Length: 305
Image (cartoon, rainbow, N blue to C red):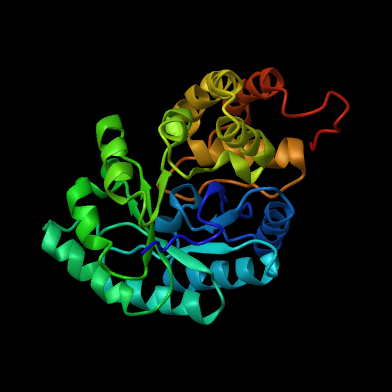
């Protein structure tokens, strides 16, 4: 029986977490960014994802970020809260908090750093499943340090609250196999902007993107082009993002999106939180040409100083 939810498709926006100059969380800026996302055409907002720097915040900060985001979304868009932690009981507590304050779902990576077996991974998600909130299982091999093979993802989806897989393997064969094994039962998302068009073209139900924090319609248009069978348009849009992907590799994905958000869209950005370095304005100046070539900002749009 399918467990697909109505919003588990299309483009999910992975919001960056805005910071003040002293590296505290800019909660008012977060509200503004969430309200912007909630008024867009994306299907859902992801809070405390990888590019939301979830690993850099303590538990109390994470709770407040989730609470503020849910409040700011005001039911206009589903909020998917990142509740990953390498410790199962910490992840369970954060997941329970997300449920209690009204998050629609959570997105969770397998345990990282610890030398876990796949049976340990199952035990981790078995505990999370007991909280009773929809779970997006995020398989991110480069981040967690190991891969969950598609066959074991099938076993994990025996847990009834796992309703979606965000598959971030860069192995296209495993992407296709995950879809073939699970695509009828749960929603299978792409997990990397670098793989956005390829995974949509083979049938994934959607994908998530950090850049949708500030220019969401670009990605919605690409997704809709694939759905309409206009692969020429979708592939051209994907190819046009190549300079953006390269500058993100050089300077850091969240740092680039924060810069664009603040300078071109009047949204909150701010610095990165250590251990990730905040690029200098001189380093970030190369982003301006990328933005201009993408055509995501009108020529007469006033820039924020």
